[in-house]
Length: 78
Length: 544
Image (cartoon, rainbow over all chains, first blue to last red; front, top):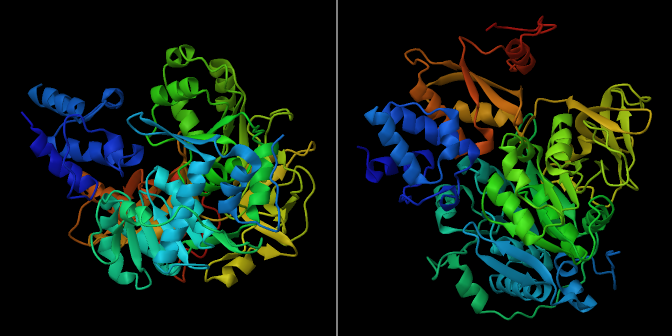
């Protein structure tokens, strides 16, 4: 079970900002550098860190960090 | 019909967009409806903008920053962006805007070259400036819009500064040739160049706002462009406000649902956006659009890259609206060629020249070419929003003009009815999502990685982005291309340059093709990527 604390360092690495503290309700609007292009970096980093793969359609459903965390944990369990 | 009125030889853009509107009786009219990423609404009248920008002009004076000195904003979309921009122009500073996703190298290139004296930014973006500040000896002050208190003697609080000064300011009578706005643009070689404009640009920006975008006094206009780019300042600030027209600005990012709810609920009447955004909307479920009432929306315009005919068909079928493609560059400052209401749209074309603009298709050796022949798209020099120079690089500026023609770097042709058709760039510059990316800058940043031995970067066709950045990389002995290294490359480019420069594909190669003088042969890379004949490779020193 991945926790938000385990996900946070990935966000800090991808967005090059050690002040980032994500919560389940965080969205792209809360992190200045999070756009559609850096989002792909985030996806790749998460996939590599947790050895999972996202399908394109799955990513479009994610509304916030909480959704992403839930999806990561679902994939890890399966 | 609204039109700009110049009185007493006052060309100051900051004043024309605020104080002039107040003296014309529009002080209490809505200038900007600001919608935050959390959908909180805040309305600013022209009198509000006038007072706030006056305050910022006074802040600049209190800090000893004045006429001819360069200041920058480095902000995401935020109300302070507009206040600082207009206040800086009132003080006759040269005002630049930086895209908030710029990385360290991109910041140094721009802030050092311009010898910027002051930057307005936010705490979490300041960390990027802090890392490179020792390379910016001219930088005197940083102002943080979200700091309650001053951080140090030269990192100051916006609120603190703004509350300590008067909201009255006498704007100096500003000549039309006084320098005004600075945007950096990428070329195929060398560092980005600072495109400098003059206050007289407002004439062309207001003219095209009226005659191309067709804006009227009771409109609500939404330009989605970030203020870090020329569209965001020419049409997200100057054009509409110089005519006393209300604008909406949204602080959030792309979301089809949110965007269309805003169009409907705020009653936007004219919308200016980008082809990439429109192509993203085309991928959405049509049901989303059927639930939205776009009765008030009269016109949709697009700028940045060529608009493919499929988007125009989609606009008619799905939205019941025409989408008008427009063309201009950072250097032209305002729309030069456009499809627009009143002229039949030729899907896929750039449209026709706007009034008082004379484009031409010229051969490589100079003479104008007849209709249907492919050549260099040029514009007869002397239009009101023509850039005045590349900052600190008059040689590059001069090289753009020959025999009274400005050479745009775009290739095009003109049909028998006077419509222009874009063909591509005459150089290696990559147009991705409407933003120009220098392959040289990406190649240079890639070489900063210890694993990378050589790099060659090209633009390749992309259905969504128009062109995508593609990198060919050879590695030093002992390094293999792995998914982890690909991610490292992507993060490095995002953090050194910008998210727009991230290579969408990275190909490992043994060597990068170069000619005998060591120049990277990008056309060879591009031909091989596209599976085409590379043409003459007699000067090729090494092969892939």
